[in-house]
Length: 589
Image (cartoon, rainbow, N blue to C red; front, side):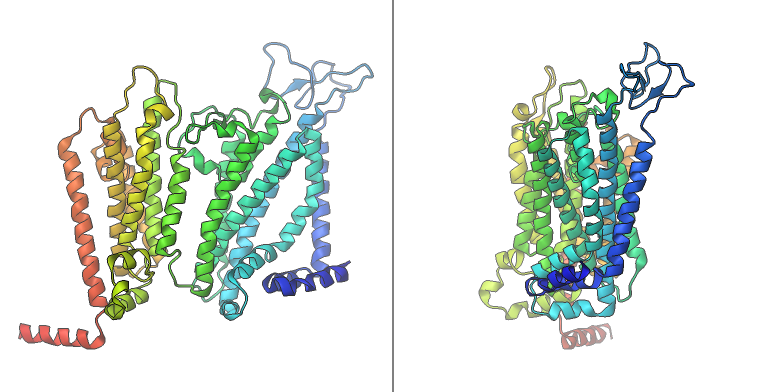
């Protein structure tokens, strides 16, 4: 069998050399045997422990006093415990068992365990493999090979975790059997597999981006383990939020939970038609009320699963553009300036749909402020990251500043330098992206009374909201301008500069405002979330408004002036720098 598989793998060499290389080095006879043995042991353990949960008749316990999760009897009043039922016998003396619930619990366990294993181990393997390639020097050799970027990306993504894929594929029969026993339709199960596949491709593209961005010359286990640890932490938090029954109102941040593929388990659990009180988890959820541009998409399982898959697909497409650029030029910007417009438009078009929700309770105003503030905070973090992705390395900036006057006249225009040239500063492109964001968001705000109607007696100050959102975008431009200046002046790694910018310019002001009372704190005027300060205030607080506006204008002006001075000085030739120093000495003497 191994020889037959090896012969089949040999044919991959003509189609994808990278995939052939990865599979050839991993699928050996001993590894396949260990994989099958591990799969058999894991499935046997699952069946053993799940079998131990099946209730059996206890002759020492009187009938009607034996309780178990999988029994079907209803407890007497006052003795009801959530998801615990009285064991009863049928006419043949056998215990009546809720087999559908038993299979659903096993299906849920296999689903979450398999998804965690796929994402965590897959990301770890991809990052560690690219670090090893970099340390051995083979990554540069692959870059010089004639294979295309797509061949490398898919070869790595399919080949590096191939043993993991094989292990999970051996679990599919048991997983499908559990789904059938729970009464989950085959079409819905196929939709869930599609969402998991889309999510895995998305996160594996992120792992490849991290690996290709690594400049470490030696293999570092700690980096791969740290990234895998972050994934484990995120999965634990999102799993706990997904499994527990909650009836909170949907907010803008609910969008981020859709990036967790196990969120689709809610639809699968509902298809079993088991009562929520019987299951005890995956019950009432914000998906019932979550709206996208006023549409209740997520009440329908096909539409909800389709949206989640499309959500992953859009993110995967733009990350793939980064990988294609970084494969040949590892120190190039993540996106071109034209591509950054597409990234911003994609984000804003999807995110704006979650900005307005329909709140009928008395806390409508608080939820609206939370949505507006979350939206502004998300945009600020996005534009800080986009500045990091578009700001060229210092050597490219030096060459651009030194030789831009030698370019043809049509390549020296403002539009060319800010929309086409990769080596120019990104400030103009960021301003254009912010303008497009404002134009796309303004209609949503003006349509607020119709898209998200408010209870009677509550007014919506559209003028204040529009001003607050515009001021938030101006704060984002201020922070990105300061970060651009910090990227070229600080000697820290670029990612560290981004972390410092987020901590000092976003997290610290918000922490101070929360400590002082987020609605009453004047610090909110100087954070990326001025919507809360402007809209919540009983009056406009004109001095604070103009103080914030003037401080932003001064910060943009001073940072831009210092940045341009530094770039001009950076572009001087060695002789110009020497003559300038000599001239300064003569003036001082």
